[in-house]
Image: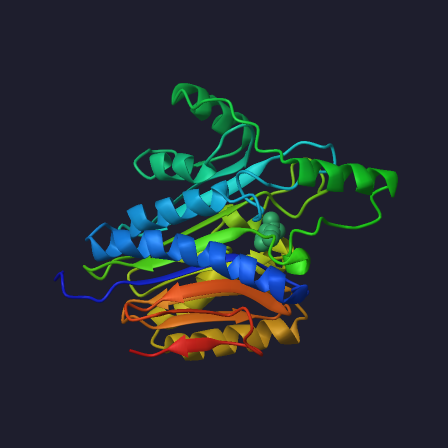
Length: 310
Ligand code: ASP
C-alpha cells in the first residue's frame, strides 16, 4: 500500500424529521466543522483511518448536542445505556459494546476490543471491561436530557422515542468514516439509542447493519435502528460496492429500496477510491465531509445522495 492517497473524511450527527431554523443549522454546522478540521488534520499527518475514526467519535461523543456519550438520551427507566462499534476495513474486523453505562467514551472500549478474542460485549460484559480497564465512572446525563425525560414522564411517555433525531437542530447518533493516506478505510458509530426504549433493546449502531467497512467501502448509519437492521443497510451498501457497483449506484439502489420499504434512516459512506456519499429517507441527515480540498455538508441540501467523485 502506498502513501499516496488523498485522505477523505465524512462524519454525521444523526438524521430525522426537520431542522428548526437557520440558527440551529449554523450551530450544528460549526460543531461538525470543528470536529472535521481536527480529525482531517490527523489524516493529513499520516494517522490511520481507525485512529481518525476513534478520535472523531470521541469528539462527537463529547459534544452534548448529539445523542452519544455526553448528552445521550434516557431509556424508559430513566437510565442511559450506550452502544458503539468500530470496524477496521483492512483487518476486516468489527468490535463493539452494547448498552454500556457510566463511561465517557464507549468508542474507546470498541477500540480496545479490536485486539481481543471476544470482540462484542453487552451490558454486563462491558461493565466488567470498564472495570478491568479502570475507566473512570462518568455520568453522561445532561440537564436537557433529564428534563426531556421528566417532561415525557409527565405526558405518560406518549412519544415512542426521544427527539434524538434532528428535530431540535441536531440531536442524533454519531458516526465517522475515514480513508487514510495509505488507502485504508474504517467506520465508527456511537449512540444513546432511540430514547425511552425498553430495557435491553439493542441498537443497530453496534451491529454490522449500522456500521460496516472492508477494503472497498465504509458506511455508518443513523435513524430508526429497527429500520436499519431490517435493511441491513451498512453491510448491504458495502457488499454492493465489493461486488462491483460504484458507490453512487450502491447508495442509489439501497436508498430506493429503503424508501420503498418506508424506512426512516440515513447513512454516510466512503469508498477506497475516495468517493464520498451520504443518503437519507428521513428529511435530514446531519453530515459533513472533507475531500482534501474543501469541506461540505448536507445540512441545506434538498434531497438524496451527494457523491463527490475524484
Ligand atoms: N440508530 C439509533 C438507534 O436506533 C438511533 C439514531 O440513529 O439516532 O439506536
